[in-house]
Length: 255
Image 1 (spheres, rainbow, N blue to C red):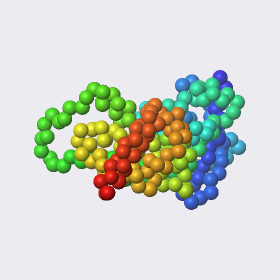
Image 2 (image 1 turned 30 degrees about the vertical axis):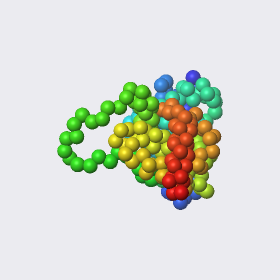
Image 3 (image 1 turned 60 degrees about the vertical axis):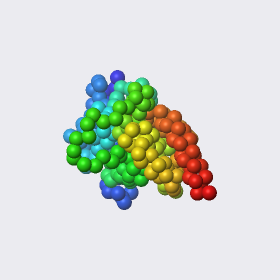
Image 4 (image 1 turned 90 degrees about the vertical axis):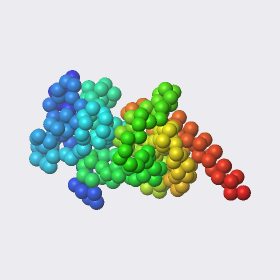
């Protein structure tokens, strides 16, 4: 293995500033991930030319691929920096090439590799991605959920709103209001819940609005990049049938 890790990082001092590139070389150690490499740079932020620069800004929290905060473009692919091992990246691209780190391009950059994913949470609000249970009293043991339904929805519940699917989707762009794959999958999760199903029509109606499921182009990139291996294309196809059925019923009822 090489003695050094070469990183090329796209930086931006503030949201409206012009982005620029800086390169760093740090000592190689086995079992490092991208986060640990960034931590080394933070401790000694010296560019490859020898110039001392500001530490690189990025976001992370759990460090075990649960929170989704550290999502960034690593050699052009949206990935979690905590689970992206340097050794594996070397196997993919070779140790002689720099590891290129960039912020996700589909979200506003706050600074360097840190982005604002607020739009994803706004989209969850649009589809009413919660189960409304009011009151402070004891509801008892609750409704039973079949094992079949549990097995269906559990993978969807692992979504960490990391933004990888939005980044990979060509229909998520500046000209589109598409809410993205993860929000659509969350509708299936909540509509499958016995209590959540009470507001099923509200969520289906939301998917018909501007930016809804009809703006999916079926590129299937979302399934390929999802770090939790959620079968997003399957859930989008199912919700497409549900939305079409709902729209047809609404049309017939109006007549």
